[in-house]
Length: 385
Image (cartoon, rainbow, N blue to C red; front, side, top):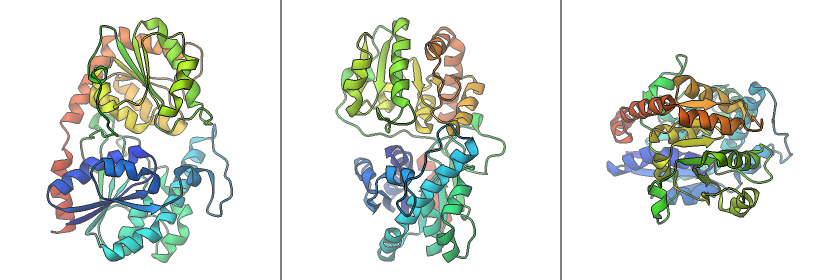
């Protein structure tokens, strides 16, 4: 069986698909993974054959339309507008990727195309080739509000296929734990989420707890000091608010921000800042504080760690509220910048063992889900081999 995995965006979109791609490859099938050029290192680090399909950086699709004109970011706008915007920029990335994908598959024709949540090029390519299309969720966030914007952005490409909206997948694989899944969610084959990330040689502190409580703080891999979402300010404010809790604070952040974070938090003791492998570090933590990113949230769930979530955008808020309703997190309002709010939420979670207990139950749910290895037979049946 030949399977083409198509993803795109940041590194997290690669690591979300890599476990299934690796399982398919380990079963003796041929696998390639295609994506935007800037995530090629993440694919090769996952020991998968990598195919670049666009040279344009991710930020280009977010900030410019097809004609290269700047577009306004919908910061602070209603969720419907944010969803439309998100669907459209993913659609623009799909449109630019399609020519190279078609050229590649003219030389190497897959029996199956697997695409990430919003990797719309996978759906169009599969329809063009006449092969089954699988949508694999890359996190537990419900993206159904995003798809219509992509359909509108991709209207020219859809028309060439005789379609007026994106084709539904022949199979949807969902990594959302059963206890968090909406009753209105699309029917899906469940699969256990397996975290992946770039690795280096480990240091003992990464997998060993010290004598103090440990809190991990992150705003994702795309945060910059000048970013419009205010994620850098969230990072530094959170670290300062956690200082009175007498805990070791780990800040998972891009290497470029190490000096800036240390400068803003120079009076905080027991602080580590920079790259760290969250799949290794998270199980050693008592609390995970973050911006609501889907992969970050699932990382905490898999580790059985309670969370404090401050969604960086309204698009992330629904999933964060479901996690709080389950009892495994405290979720604050989107972009909550009230002085002391994060510190108080962290104090609440650490002093109340109920959140940790529920986080452990959620981890058990995830561990009971079918593994990527289990899904290989499902893909084989779909490809009719």
